[in-house]
Amino acid sequence: MNPAAFAVLNLDALQHNLTIVRQQAPNAKIMAVIKGNGYGHGLLRVAEALTNVDAFAVARVDEGMRLRKAGINNKIVVLEGFTSEQELNALLAYRLDVLIHSFAQLDILSKRHERKQMGAWLKIDTGMNRLGFKPIDFPSVYQQLKHSTIIKKPIRFMTHLANADDLNDVMTIKQIALFKETLANIPGERSIANSAGILGWPDALTDWVRPGVMLYGISPFPGRTGAEHGLKPIMEFHSRLIAVKSVNSGETVGYAGSWRCQQATTLGVVAVGYGDGYPRHATIGTPVLVNGQRVPLIGRVSMDMITVDLAEQPNAKPGDPVTLWGKNLPVEEIAEHCNTIPYTLVCGITQRVKQIDSAWLV
Ligand SMILES: *Cc1c(COP(=O)(O)O)cnc(C)c1O
View 1 (tube, protein in one colour):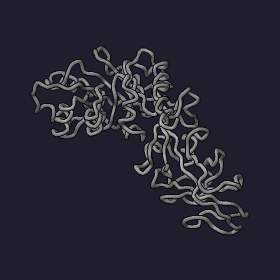
View 2 (cartoon, protein in one colour):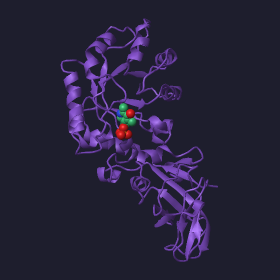
View 3 (tube, helix red, strand yellow):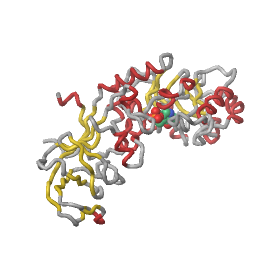
View 4 (cartoon, protein in one colour):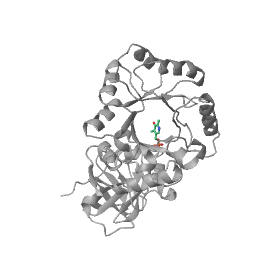
């Protein structure tokens, strides 16, 4: 028995997408970003399919610990670093590389003198204004780190682009220039580019690249799809019809009666809702595939159900297959109908949704 709502994961395509990264950045080492439960695709599942990368990046210490406990042996970089002695101990115990981005972290480091060492990236804030040291503070921070016995040498350097998905924004050029200027004459590997940097900004390609969303086959650029970059989507999101009924002109559908029927039609109820990660803010008209054909969402998204207008599919019946995103329905397009970015949709798939490796289906 198949669960009503399920995700099919085309994990083989991860290697294909990695090839696209290598084509774009042939001389760079690759740090595959698998934070956020592998962008909703499963942390371990993705890691196990990508063990030929140079490193994995996760956001938090516990994500790195999970990877190590599962036997992943690649270099693992924890992008948010640590905020306490305990987290620092875990980084050491689990051989996780750390991002040093704040003076609070330097204070903790200054109290530690053990022999055990950890790999470190110094984060420079070139304009994102999230994590990292300002360029003016760099020289003194670098000196301090160089003298910290707990930090393995050589130290590496990272910055993060704030608006690389807008190919017309000069901010990216400024960030790259400031990073280079700050590190002039300093030895050590550098990393700038996320997916948008890899696909859109050749000057951002340095020693290491950090692809996230593109590995999952999704375009980082608004208005474009992964296919336009030669990428293949990993996740398909499916469910089925559980009821089909007629509605008369003038009747309303769903909570708050937000959709009113203009002329009699056939309505389908699909077993998927925000309890599965289908976005509640999906607007009326968001496309859904029923039996492979597009029909519009009508009414509000509930926790366990959505309703669609089956005017174009009058013979559809309970049990028929429904696709929320996947083949012929890019997640990027759904995101636009939901006023969000595709990252949030794939990350938002909930525990209830059974994830199935497409290799098991053949
Ligand atoms: C999430 C993240 C990435 C990956 O970004 P994508 O847009 O998904 O490619 C790279 N670097 C850092 C620091 C990140 O937080």
